[in-house]
Image (tube, rainbow over all chains, first blue to last red):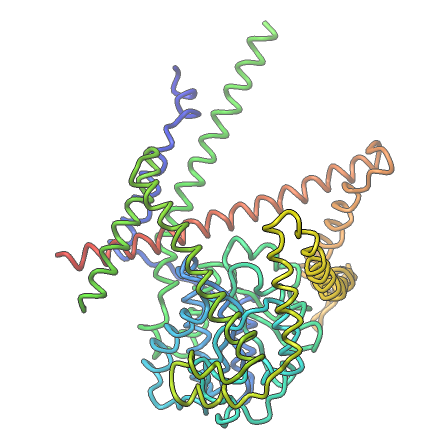
Length: 288
Length: 231
């Protein structure tokens, strides 16, 4: 077997091992690259930044533990930004697993970094409700009809933050952190387009290409995967350098991500070169 | 770190290694972790469905006093019990029971009614939204000026971007037009459409790679935390 033929038949376990090293080594040496926000992510930051203090922002946690490395930094960064800007934050979940993820953000970001924020005045955890897009359809006109209590079971009308809220059109911005269906697409279809409400947020990288066609007319901005999360964190740190320590989870993970990509690109190039060389050789042999 | 966190970390760490072992070859450890995941997932969704749908949306609405038995705190119990009963919820209850008749061949015909209701509801709800958001709005998003002139004059980047969108959409649509043979200029445009699709697939593949590597980074971080707790 020639060298070129060997390159086309590399044992997959060698590739797995090299990918593992490409991830582990940059993590150990804390390799960090400079991340700059792209316009599609910057527009989310600018919108949250431009909203007047006390604006109503709905954030929906539509993901589960499986996509935490991608989605949690997005959720934490956007929640942090809303708290910095003193917006009123309404937290909910269309995914059953989303409520637990929202609780992590509440504990780590809101309670951890903004202890002065009062539950029921500055933010509220509405929790998960079943129904998928049917739920979005229902809360568009009657949110309190579906959410009679908050996530802990207290009467929804007992919270000052809920005053003046009838349905989704009463919110100034809807943020979705999604990883599938129902998720961002359903928020665009059943809330944003229907009520002309600004919708933005972040999704897993697998889902991102399916959502780019909605930008910029139907979707205000989009964070695609870890890169999108890192760009939002970068935008936040540029404006608020005090949060450099807490708001760089995704930025730090982009180091191993970049090295792993380089390894994959290397193997794609090597595989293609080997393929074309072997094909050319076979053609020549046939013509002879 | 408490004992519970410590146990959680060890169980998570060991199960992660069991799943990773498949990368070498299939083995009993991987099989065990896989079956455990399937079993736990099924049980989890059953419990979630019971507590978030059946109890609050059905039992709690038909007979609110029953919520006093399930509420986790007195305040929640008082709120839920005070709700007025909604006997209309008996309709979905009956439809739900009818759905279960699929389990007995003789009575399975009854399940067609709730099935028809579900299909009708889903089609009715989704049709208008898809038509609005994925058809009309997307056509509107493609109707853009091919020559962009900004405040400072001709915008080359914007013009190029809009041209790529308009021509790319047209070429891809031509590729899916099968009523005319793909020959001549039409065939050339269809071929350009294939290139547009290939670029889109390539971008999607790149994003998929990024997603998988992100998950790997997350797991590696967790394993690092686990190993760090040992030493």
